[in-house]
Image (cartoon, rainbow, N blue to C red; front, side, top):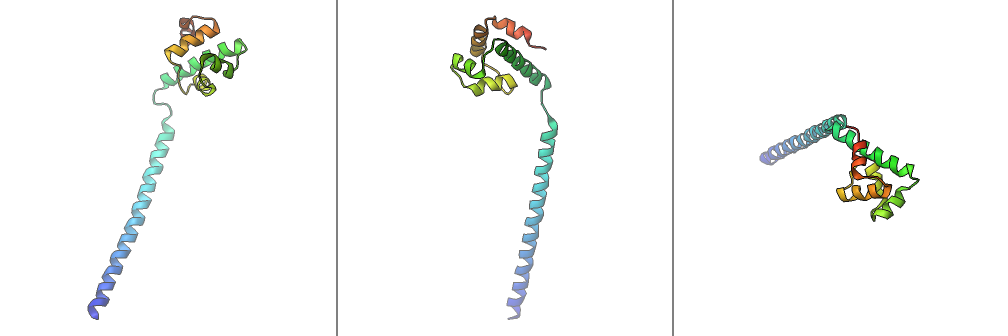
Length: 121
C-alpha cells in the first residue's frame, strides 16, 4: 500500500512537471511568434527601389488610363484580363507582363518604350 501511494505521488509530480513544461513551452513559443511578427512588420520593403519602380510604373499606367477617360474595367476587357489585374498593376502589387505592357501601350496610343521612359528611377 505504501508503494502505491508513493508511486501515485511520483506520477502526480511528473504530471505537474509535464503541465508546467507545456505551459512554459507555449508561452515561449508565443513570445517567439510575437517577436517574429514585430520584426516582419517593421521590416518594410526589403528592396525599396523595386517598390518605388513598381509604384512609379503603376502611376504611369494610371495616368495614361485616366487621361484617356478609360476605366479599369474597360482596360481589362480590351486586354482580356481581370479588372483586379489592372488594379494590382496600378497600385504596384504586381507588374504587367511584357505582352500586356505592349498591349497597354497600343491601347493608350504610345510606344512601350515611352511608358518605360516615364518610370522614375
